[in-house]
Length: 193
Ligand code: FNR
Image (cartoon, rainbow, N blue to C red; front, side, top):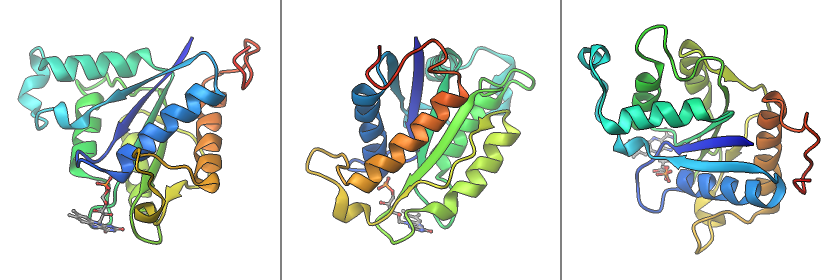
């Protein structure tokens, strides 16, 4: 069974990026049968401290590394904070990338998306995050950028997105990641058969 771990780069209540994560979970449940999803909380992690590489990490760090290793795909949704991915997300990638030579992201199929209330959907934060992920060993899937613009206007009262274009783009991104991870090779289809 294939699995996707998802992480929002915002710890804000009512975050549009957390809404992207919730929407992707629903898309996967409805369209990609047999694929499990799990949300990881970047806000649970302490600040990265290289001194702790040599000793057992905190429970949150150990668990996050374990869940990322258990997944076939990692999906990250970031806000743009001053043109870059959020600090909590960078912090999570730094934890996952260490100890040196043991990155939990090594060869992990990864996709990046973003959201903002503005007209560009925080797309400007994606390139830098992709570069960081490459340093951490992740295999970032090539796909046209998926960025949820005007998120304030599109978010539903359930804290998700229903806009057809947003749903289609997120589904396309997930499909590209699962294809890269070899999903479908065993004969699964959108109905999970
Ligand atoms: C922002 N925001 C923002 N938006 C943007 O499109 N480009 C930017 O460079 C920035 N910079 C920025 C810096 C800081 C410190 C904050 C707090 C915010 C606005 C940002 O897109 C908005 O707060 C989003 O709602 C954040 O994402 P979540 O929390 O909704 O997921």
